[in-house]
Image 1: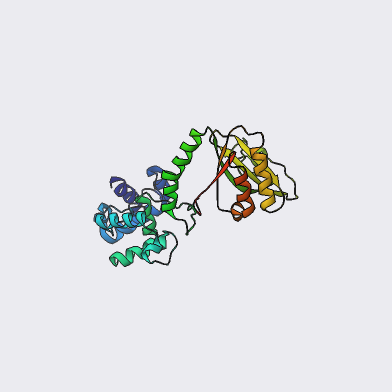
Image 2: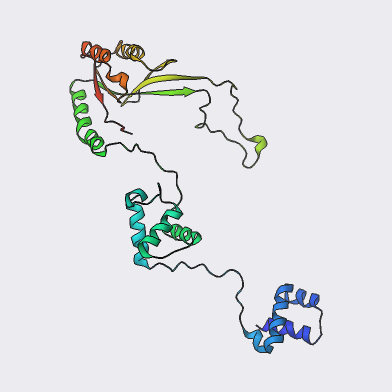
Length: 277
């Protein structure tokens, strides 16, 4: 406050120019102008008022602690659709609607955003799950069925294989990484690729030791392609294979079942619950 009084006195008594006062006291023109205005309106008492500078501190005290805890518990343990809200995920608008419905408090979007940040929530890409997946059957397979398969495999000195099909193409390089100079696009890693898109299909198995067996094919998966892969899988195999696979229609085909029965001393099928992943 002493600086204010001294700066204003130099201007009022015409001892110095504005420029000289600003340089000597290291203040800006707007601050000096405000002090002179306060002096003209209120005299020296106006210079004793401490003006707040900058943005006021952000407060988010519109919800009580117990209400905050209640909201956190709800959005942690439930999704919006379970509570009959027209939202697929807990977005800011969904939380806003929840608070309005629960406590009749209408908060702004920025306030909701600050609350979520305070509670430790961040926007995240959701995991995807099949809506018709049966968690009980999945749990049963993991806790009951698979241990039985594992014990039988160990008793017969066999190998457990997991089978799946997938499509592959020449543009699948998102997993690759290379070093370059940070912030310099001139030295950014460059991966050359063919303009022509090439794609194919693959069926493969992997066992618990990480050993990988695969076959590439161009057509859609059918009975003949699947049987061809199975024949190659058991060829020159000295251990019985306990094959765990999904419920693709081809896997349940009559010809496939008949083939497996003829080679049951070399391979057995075990099917995952529907929509296991």
